[in-house]
Image (cartoon, rainbow, N blue to C red; front, side):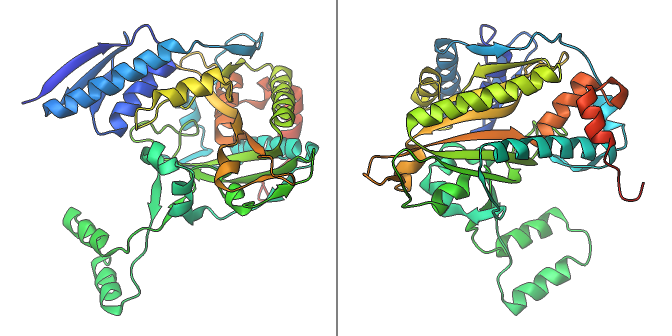
Length: 391
């Protein structure tokens, strides 16, 4: 018997509604959102429906409890550059599978412009550049609680065992397109996954600096850019939400006071950059949209403690604004896990500034269009000054 239930989320923001429905999908509950803001839930068992209702009601209460706070908002008008359909048809976007998109030509040169800009910010703060593999031990994610809070995002890595009979079986099967049962047969012989594709660029740097002791007043400054992998179920959209995307992070270790000051400086610099480009953006207090374990206190803590701000791009035909950068104070979470402190054993804190490069690219062309003639002069000069080698 199919059970159904409607939950009214119309009093919440569009972003909160989407977050709650995504959370239901992540815990295995079928849910859909109507244009009016109602979550339509369906389940086969009473226990599933009870779990769904408990989750949705808890998150609805949380998202009503924590009010929206806008730190800064641009005066630029909400404009329509290109549409999603025009972007998809431009010839510089290449679709391989859900969540897997390539770029070339003018889009790639614009991507490099933002990439260079944010690398320049890291250099301004004298951040030491780091390079990490995209794969990491799963135990690292477990140490910081990522898998227990966000299992829906994690992409596990495995391989075939180094056993000749198994490898011969795999080679024989893969000589032709696989049936569903043959694909399952392949999956059954994989080794147990011990590694993951990184879901956050900065994660390796905390384990890398385990046991670090900072001098009094010192701020350790690091930067890294890498591919990031987060599975997003049915929400993939080219450039704005990918399974594989690129992020530049700037990480600081130091005192809470120093990191609060540095974060404010970075946010001001980034917002001024957006205003110089006449982008329609706002800088808002944020939180991770949901936690699978239903721990609403974490959401409230993030907002009340002002530990996370997001730079949101407003795009006229999108229901919710698009977050392309985040500015996070971690307090002593990572530094406690990895024993990072000052020489006098006072616990240090950490902060991370993140820039999602595909999202910046997407937001820019959706607001400014695909024709460089309509771009701000500084962007047009920088992008058009670079050419493809074969051009």
